[in-house]
Figure 1 (tube, one colour):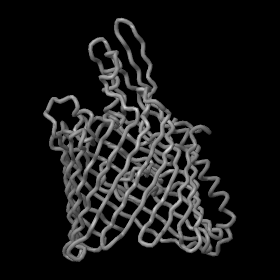
Figure 2: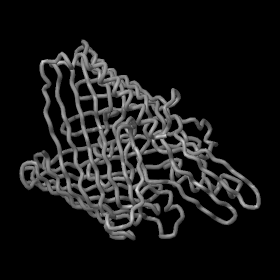
Figure 3: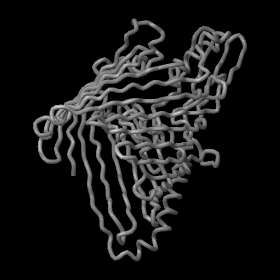
Length: 466
């Protein structure tokens, strides 16, 4: 399925390049600039069965420029390696996490990836700007926690990286922006012919409890079809120190939903077949810069196909938001940020609401995967970041806590600029829970479930900017 999507993306990209070929052929010269980076890193998970989680090289190379001063272009290639399991037996398999990419995995700690992350052309016609091709799109104004920012899928748990930018996958899109008169703002239209889900580890597994067996099949990318097209509209306005936008985005859920098949009898077999349901997302966001503060808020109303919350396998409609406040102190050497992120799940049902033991088990199991274990969840966070010794030394600490799940994540890092373009960074992450060990609701938390609670990590990275 993913191979068909990738072939469709390649064909569409070739059409874009073919359309621009006559103009490029007439160009007297191409004005190009190259940039790149290379990182060597090692990650350890002291509490895991294999403490050496990842180690290897990552890198990126980009070409940016113009043809005949009218057509902008960007080509960006990224490579990822994890060689931690090199000495172990490897049963290699190939996958395409997103269009125009290739990933090979040999065992749980051995991976190679090559990704044409961006490949686009852009041009202007009066007040209209157009960008066509594979690209990374920002959708919203919040910093870090962006409830509306769902245009690009992400690598989720499949790559060990220290920057959020590396987690985004490129998306094939036609991106049109109309600039309003007087620098009042912009109106943006987006069309995506190929839907790309999050790149995740295999979810296939079998769970048995008494006479009930749940079989979760592996996920596949949506195929190329008219019903799978995605798109959105966004209006952004600049009003002095206040910026605000309203948006609509129609996309297929980046995480899988499930078709549920139940075969009864003395022993009940429940099969969960992943698919990606349609989400219509309506967003509002704003940023305000009063008196040295940076205040931001963003809200996303996500409407799914489960209108009354009765479909166990389909994510419920929800309202997610974030309110952020940041301020710098001591001549910008220290920045403190506070955030509150609530989420309301409409028509929510607890596992105990179901009469059948099989449905209760299924509801409890799905709560681990769809992030909707609670009707109302709140996440609070505190972030401290410093710029010391003339910005040569940059420490940072973050604490996140889910108030209903009662779990938390703490991270800390220090980056040091050894020389121009040479940076050394080290850090750690600790997952925890305020619930007692053995409490079944630990499984419903983002930071306390069995897939994360023992995955505390340490890392060291040397990065060269080329």
